[in-house]
Length: 212
Image 1 (cartoon, one colour):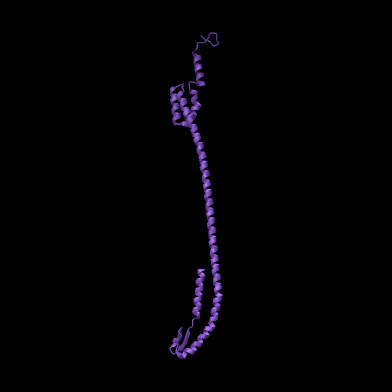
Image 2 (cartoon, one colour):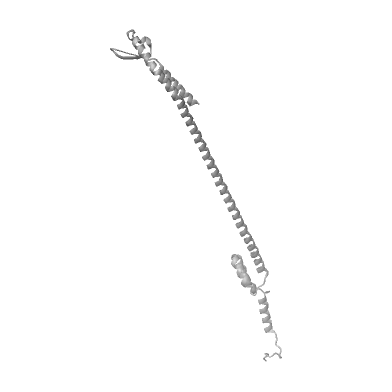
């Protein structure tokens, strides 16, 4: 509305300026123009007044017609510009809203992926902690078993203890594969002891393989 008022004021000023009386005469010194009737020499006044009146009659309808025709067109153009600006602002707001929604969806997807990764990592960590805890219990039980057991040779006990302490996994596997048979309470050790004792016992003369 402010733009419309400024344009109308400008057009009014132009119309008023165009409707002002300008007096023109020509003498030996050249052509003279003035808007003050009293400054026109007396011998030229009648002629100048007549020409000025005739000029005003010719230009006034045209000026009025121009003002009547151009003001609605200018107002219509201003309305079109305002409508275009409003549509442009609405499109910008829609684009900003779409970008905001896309950013929100991307943030939600990233948050979901992060949560899934954390859950998978937590499950993986819990699984390996459980395995490590079980291996630790087996390791401690193996050490206790070595300490409480008697072996055929005292050096075997020391070897198995050092192997299990410094190489836990490999030491435990080797101990349960080969070390158990070296203990004094193992079945193989008892069989060996029985065989040794049977050799030391005196044989009966009635046996077929008895030799004097």
